[in-house]
Image (tube, rainbow, N blue to C red):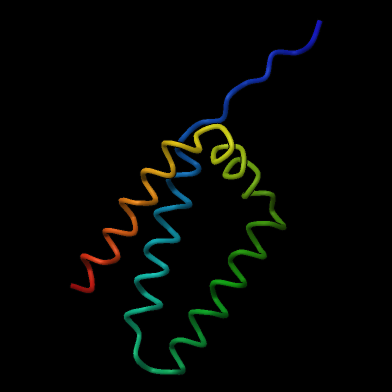
Amino acid sequence: MAAKKSHAALWPGLIALAVATVYLIALLAVERQALIIALLAAGIAAAVAAAWLRLLDPVSRSFADHEDALGGFAIVAAVAVGAYFH
């Protein structure tokens, strides 16, 4: 008998989407070149550390299991970015 596949929770994907949205707003809002470079370096370091610590595995499963819902939240995030800069 095959093991029953459990579904991933929605919240890891939502948290990742929220963090990415805030990071994008911060990156687009910064005007000084030194801060842009620092934010890019911090983003790269955070992504590498998250992958190394296996923190992205639940996020990946969440996006795979809840693709439609997180797609809708991605649209909301894009509107939020646009509203922030309007």
